[in-house]
Picture 1 (cartoon, rainbow, N blue to C red):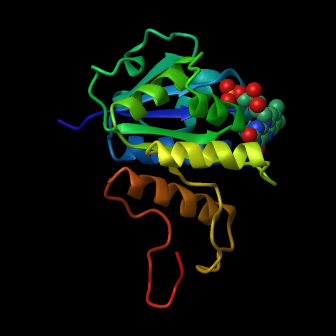
Picture 2 (picture 1 turned 180 degrees about the horizontal axis):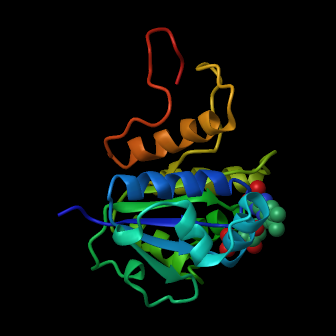
Length: 196
Ligand SMILES: Cc1cc2nc3c(=O)[nH]c(=O)nc-3n(C[C@H](O)[C@H](O)[C@H](O)COP(=O)(O)O)c2cc1C
């Protein structure tokens, strides 16, 4: 049986990455524990005109393998280290959430689930979007990397000569799926002479 992936969408710009990732996971029939922060919901509406759970369902395919939890429910399944999990992705990941995980303060379900993922030595993939970075952002990212997290910035490459926004989104989403060890065909594949 496939273990569930916890997927969190927070309030950084980049809601299209999170929506595409959720759609890719539902297409793979991967079990998903989904959590969206309050600002994450706001960004879904601002960037994609997606309103609430119904809107997100309509945009991301078959939800038979998805369970949605409220970010305020700190007692939900992803908050427990004894619940089996294939790891966690926060995409997009705000610098606020990233800072909280780096400091271990865990005041929401998303932050608690990430904290648990680190303590259980499971895969934690963070997809931040901010520019420029302050020294505090960089220190928090280094701290998390040293604690075992993968910091995978929403920084698509251009060597595959994209001419559509979807190709830029897929570049990042493909990298996330690869970090989860999932078999997929999203985003460009390495060819001889191309950079990372
Ligand atoms: C329209 C909008 C865009 C934002 N863009 C970003 C962003 O790109 N990166 C970031 O780190 N924070 C961004 N923020 C700030 C976060 O949403 C804010 O720090 C929030 O408290 C994060 O809470 P959350 O991590 O629980 O979603 C943005 C906020 C708004 C309202």
